Length: 310
Length: 249
Figure 1 (cartoon, rainbow over the protein chains, first blue to last red):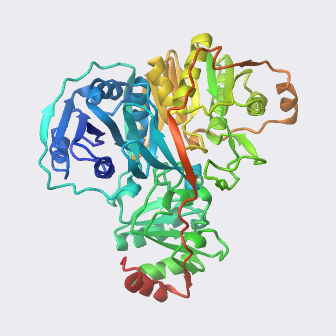
Figure 2: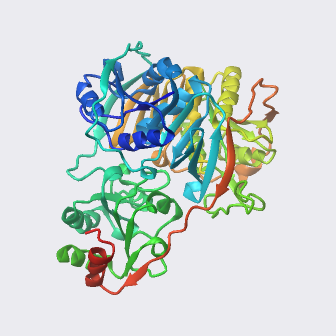
Figure 3: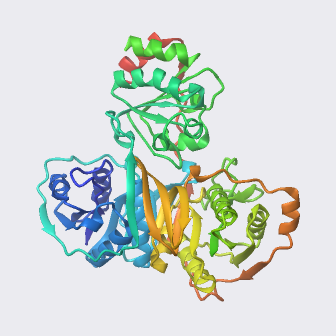
């Protein structure tokens, strides 16, 4: 049986996470199709067709798919679900919003945020903020799954040549309407896809100091900026900077934690990073237990020094 | 209008969980249990809507063992008006929870169900969306601001790139994110008063819902430990390590 991956996109390009979900689909095994549902989304469909290892792109193009409303996307997925053994999406805000709705309509369980595929019906997923890994087996006919991107190395975004097929669109549910979107504007890489991340915590003191100290370092490294929950709660940076159990899950090649003590829920979001550097004045801070390299001292001296030396 | 708020009894967020030696799950004996933090936010939001004159009654619902009554009493002490416990010792997974809540919605006809976006034990993040699907109601997940006007709710949601504001028709489902509000503490007089508030007990059978689990947990293990690294003396040493040992810059 074939596997369908719901592709998140902005109508022009695919979002990070799609290629990781395709990688998870490859581990399950079977022909892989991508569903691109959007409004004037032919750009995204062309991008999807180039993803390595994908056989077919299904395109549902209609104004009411523009914002990714789950009330509209779920019936669309349910309508084609009988052709598939597995329905996958990246565990982004988009995937988490839609997929449980699909699962319930199909009367099946969802397997959330898998990090490994053991067999076509058995998967590993973190529970308790990643403090335990559960191996779960699904007894349902159709497996609805969200994929934690950090668990799977992305397939190549180019090199494929999938066929593009338009599918019938479902009617607009009319239940929900997007009034506005305020997206954080940044020239930096997206947090969840960045190879390097500089992250700040409560130790930054305030939002101005966060920016003065961390932005030059991030610029030097070409890194994304992140934050701990404490820094977000204190209003230093917007909510979408948060790395942690209930924020974003990241696994860059280099994660530099500055002024972050290392609460369990923060570690849950970044401890799969390849190399972790911690800069903190408290040598007892739990962050040092997961850091590869620790630097104890005043971040307001050390970080500018590091920035200058790079 | 009525607001229904489901609350889950989970391992307290301050407890560091331990995996059982037989790999059947995590150790729950003699562990401090509390209300799921996101559900506290849901109760608080419902109370705010009642204080604003939008809601008239708040019903807290929990599903699980007898001790979930304690969680419900906490919700009542915070300000919920009455409580329902669906008592069962079964492993109730999100789909079954959504079906039980649907049955209760059909009895109670709330205009709004406010749920936490996820429980901090299984981290599933499913129940609200599933309930919305089963009821064919709109959903506003990951809410960071809620405004209810005649027959509509305007909800600001946390999404990956920033914020999004949507308008949904009531009845509807809202799931709460961290920064929606700061839950109040229950005061001692309110804890005393909560003991007298009504708490109904029912069962999955009386609600006509099959709660058989669809996912079988084969084993639960500790995650691989990250070995601690080294403390370097200065910035130069750090750069040397990153360049020559880790090779990441």
